[in-house]
Amino acid sequence: MSNLSLEVRRGEVFGFLGPNGAGKSTSIKMLLGLVKPSSGQAFVLGAPSDDVEVRRKIGFLPEDFRFYTWLTATELLRLHGRLCGMNAARLRERVPVLLELVGLTPHREKRLRDFSKGMLQRMGLAQALIHEPELVFLDEPTSGLDPMGRRLVRDVIRAERERGATIFLNSHILSEIEITCDRVVFIKEGRVVASHDLRANPEGEVRLAARVRRLSGEAVSGLEKWGTGARLDGERLTLVPRSAHVLPEILRHLVASGADVFEYRPEHVSLEDLFLKIMGEDQGL
Amino acid sequence: MSGAWIMAGVTFREAARRKILWTAMIAGAAFLALFSTGLHFQVKDATSHNVPPLIVHQVQAALLQIGFYAVNMLAVVMTILTSVDTLSGEISSGTIQAIATKPLPRWEILMGKWMGFSGMIAIYVGGMFGGVAAVGYVIGGVRPHGTVMAALLVYLECLLLLTVTFSCGTKFSTLTNGVIVLGMHGLAFVGGWIEQIGALTTSPRLVTLGIVSSLLMPSESVWRRASFEMQSSLTRSLQFSPFSSASAPSAAMVGYAAVYLLVALTIALYNFHERDL
Image (cartoon, rainbow over all chains, first blue to last red; front, top):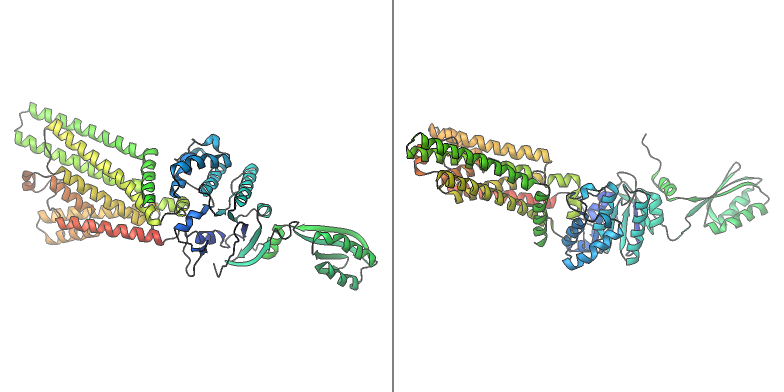
């Protein structure tokens, strides 16, 4: 990591993106005090990351969650709750709620060694939430989950946000991030290289591609009124409109300028496109 | 400190749930059954052959020494094998991550595990020593000498090995850890014999070599002190038997072993606090 500075707002779902080896998991481990930075300090909820007390407010689902497989589902949650300082009465109330939340109530007395990878991942999510933390770190929470499990994770994240918790989400599955997160940052080689507010433009970024003839240079320049990066390459016109709302006005402008429009194709720029644009193509293979 | 007690309970429960504790207890019970059968036949044969009582008593005392020696070996092996994976294994698999991010300091995690294993070893050593002593008394009528002190010393030996295993477990993989700890105990074992042979053959250089090996790893010398505590004055005067001690380590060596344990525990706590998980 190098001069990594992150600001996560309370109550938001924050996506942490980057290619393999960018330092995402290491950053999370530093914020949780599992890995010590070679220099500098990390602060979480206003306290140094190695502060024990601040961990009462933090939940963590590690990537590839593993735990004592000789415990039953109920015992695992009780143990984590006790380690978080919860008393017996609160655990009696909280453990069944969590098991219900992750859909494992029928398996509450089953030992974890008999659980599938997806079921273990759900248990990992439950243990991270047992003490109703203010801040939840989820490192690849949908890893190993089937589509129902992924939806469950999304629902849990939404429910946690409604409860007022802040979610710090690290995932490779960009479509999940796109649906779930309020804001994302992209890191590369240990530095933040870009950030993107997914709620500022809920429809996402739009890119326009059109095939036109007889379009004057003056008309191309006039497109700057509705977007950026207007470029005519032969018959191919490309432009990034300010929003999807201005698309009809652009089309009217082209026709009014006397151009023949053969194709007019707005495309939504996915988070994956944005990711590839920011990170560049994979240099491997 | 409550976190340490929770972790101690988990460690204990893990041993019980994974049948480690029960397997060790069954193996111990099998050993006691074999030992009591052997002693029973020895008593019966000695009676039928009219062996003089003094000789019978000495043979039975020697058999008891063999029994305690076997208990010591079993306790050492159980200590190392059951604890060798507890830190290094959980660190390499990532199991420790979900625990270490809970609101308890790392030293409580390590101390909790250490306390859990210490409790199990106490039960094992106490049970096995008591068992051998009871068999000796009930079948042979031999009242062993210094058994409580010997059991405490063997417990110290096991705690020492447990702590060194923990200390190495904070730095090395499970396999490397096992090789190091067994290797160190093997070194101490051979050094102990060298020292005894040196004492018998009045070779000061061999004795010095033995003492140096005991300083490097004092586990075997604690056993030899335990063995010395259990010898009758007659056995001590005979000076040498394969399972007793001709050159008894001093009380200072026992003190050194206790300090060694504390230093190893401090190193374990420091390493575990400082390392990345």
